[in-house]
Length: 183
Image 1 (tube, rainbow, N blue to C red):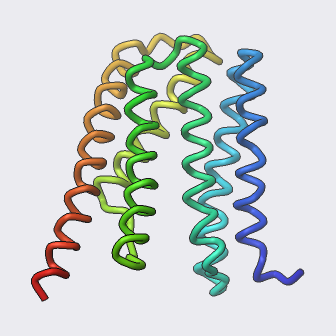
Image 2 (cartoon, one colour; image 1 turned 45 degrees about the vertical axis):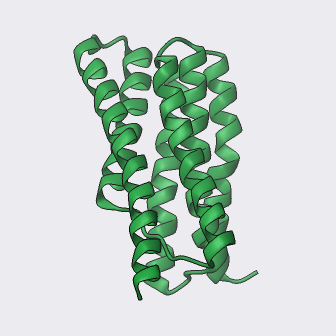
């Protein structure tokens, strides 16, 4: 194994943290859950930095990284919903958007061939809002800080950006296909 595999190993470690996060949340140990979530976030930044800085970008990494991100966020949202910290409708919205994007990508590529999709700015902002909400809820529960208005505001921001970015991806696929048909 060479150093070029380091980003993928970091990403696999992030995937391995998902069941740890779920188990810790099951026990309602929000402080440890916050630490696990933050370590996973740092590993996300680290694997990207190492891959780009040293030219260790791979197809496997390009597939694993978003899978790790989605698994971590969906795992956190499902558990926080079960524990009563996130509204069911929000978890459903977040999960359905990801299913829509993954399913849409698979259907599109099977019907029309490979497509290179980069996350849009809206999608990146949505992911940032989703992460911020998880961190805020975990910190709120772990330290008993009273931030209900901030959490409520983030819940609605996540809802709006999740729906908007899902619609945006569907629109992009339609425009891309329409543009291909016109040429």
